[in-house]
Amino acid sequence: MYFFEWLSWLAAIDPKEEREAFEKQNKTIKKRIIYESEEEEEIAAAKKSACDAPKSRGPVYVFNENVLEMRSGMWEDKRGLISILSLTVIIMIISGLEIAFNSIKTLIDLASDYQGEPYGERLYLALFFLSTTLCILWFYLKYGLRFTRFEMFTSRHLLIRFNRITQQVYLHRPAYCGGIVTLPWNGVSSSGADKKSTIASGVGLPLALTWSSAFSGTLRTELIWVGKSSNNFTELQAEWEFIRRFMDEGPEGLPRPHITSHFPWPWQAFTPQFEGLTHYFRSSPRVLKCGLLLLSPAFLIIGTGHWVSLLLCWKPRWPKIIREAGLPGKPVPALTTVDDYPPHIQERLRENAYLWAIRPGKRPERKPRASKRRPKSPI
Image (tube, rainbow, N blue to C red; front, side, top):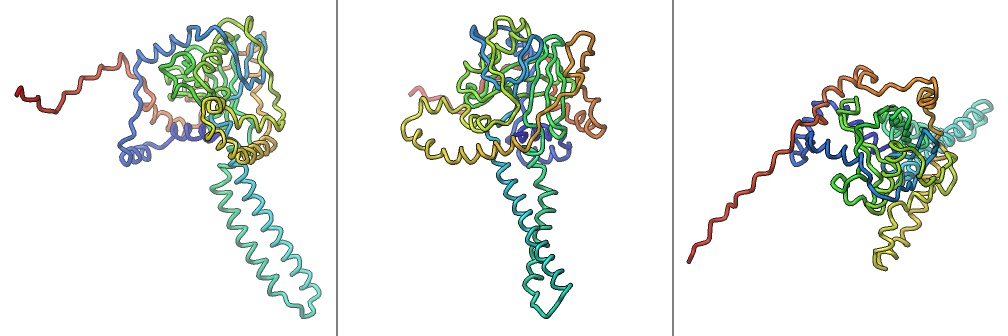
């Protein structure tokens, strides 16, 4: 669930030496350069009305006069596979330790009243399972636990909260993904505002909200994926228009969304597996539909892992200052800056700030490519 956020955070704090070495080995990868004029166009498009039928497909957890809180994050619908693999390893470790401790207990009982019984088999089992399980446990704690934390023993969801009184946006993320961030509403751009900023017509992707380094305060671009995966660009437009009207005009006139509970009900684990697939069911041929039906057991397995992941996580909780933001007499949270991070993270963010820097002016026009072919002879 947090895998995409973790990769984005690693890209922001990656040491410069490692980045340069990677770029030398992969010269075909080109960095996207953004110019000031392009950013102004995207922000201006985000301030305009995107459609006449705003609608939120959720999940929405809070909706009132001041606050709109939604699920965020990429690949939430794919959650469950890491949980299944992690549980398999954990069960193997517990089973191995149980066999080893039972064998040791039997050896202790034999030693306390030894009457010549053979003990070689028990001694072998104890040594084998204890050494093997401890090696697996060490390897898992050192390398595997970090991946388990993407879906288990962490906050149940990534959240994004819009506060129209303070005109701020709050992101709820674990510390290893960048932590909780406060961003200004002014300066946001959206993939639902203009087709130019939409990836692959929005099919199979959630709504993307972006704050450039000029507005984020963390010297990097903040990219947040909001809500469910979409089937077309129209759904992205409706989702974005719902958020824009709430923040700019208020909740009046907006259709009230279905409020989702934080309690881990089973259907909250199985329904996300089909987000963004309606498009394929409607327009695909019968052969592909049959193939999707044959894959239904895989959806069932991943959905079960998804539910286990929800059960082994806890409800995310905002800091008190964010929960009370916008209430009369309560302070307004300060915007997140690079100085809010530990010194070693600040150093990395400042070193890599050039990666997200915006170039002034407009993008230079491409020069027409001169043809290398020789002109044909008039004969």
